[in-house]
Length: 478
Image 1: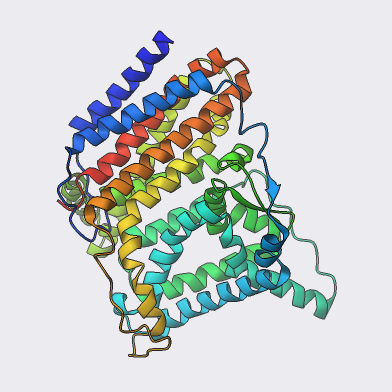
Image 2 (image 1 turned 135 degrees about the vertical axis):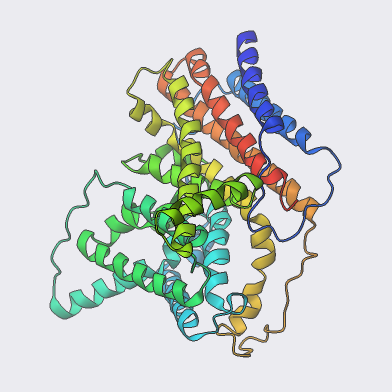
């Protein structure tokens, strides 16, 4: 135990030193300056790292047998609740709502005002859909599956076609080697639209991209079948399903029930592309946080000038520069994870790729808290605008629901409270990653001593991700 504490505290000390000496990065989408904190910022780094180390020691001491790997503990919800929330009528209604919202996004993007803040499409896509569905999935399970408009359209089209022309030909088998790579490419592409595309805020451009993605998704569904494509290939289905595995809520065989939180991640099938998917999820958010910081602000013009000298126009050069930045974000996340897996392999002699897939599920809660911590103020403040934009989606002075006169209430939460929430969820997510990693090691190695030894490096990974996340928050809007 003495050796365990010495190694654990050394890992934490190294990460905290990085927090104290490393660069300060500004948070993207920050809307208000953070108020003066009652304790110094560096103390948050120490406190977070101490929490991680104490959690590690506590797990090594008290968590001697796998609890999440063995059973999910799923139990059905009471009949009245299960039938009220999950039945053919609610499933149909959710699909109709999803398709309706997709139609409004496309309609408002093309037909509405092109002023970003007055058009329904940008706020719904970037705030409600991209950010809001993440905490909703963590709390309530895979709700996007019910509201997924492309899945609803595909199923409806298949039903109608089978009634009109008879039995449909069987779709092609989805290639196992393809795995989640299409989903990873989709999430990277969406992040590129948000962070790098010069027209990424333009309502009509977003509507056009939505139409294109809808067409490509329905074509892929026709080729590989609805269930296969939405399980493996459709980016947003895969994205929100990963987050929903943190939740205690699960619909199993059409029946609503409850399970142990985090337990579904232990049954994540790490097919090809799963590691790439998590690297993209973490790396793009990390770059978004760094993109308004002093380091990127000083580097980006030089990168843009480099592409300008190669003959690219200003807009293209800017897009290429931010694409490079996104790839750098992915590289940083990859290096942290690779170092951790390399350390685990001092105990686990399996091939590197196999070990990397074994522990990739531990990055899902970290990805969730990166998104939540980074975009929390964005969601809390800008999310309120959906109330008045819903009444006037085209920006033409309508008041369909009597909410057009509402405004954003910036007093709903203070900047200091935002900081506490961000740090709290960041630490909680990384502790969850530690729990998942420790539980998996116990199931693999069976002996608690060997399992603990294998987790020294994973502790360093979690502390590294924690301090890196704090870098992205510590100097917001200064």
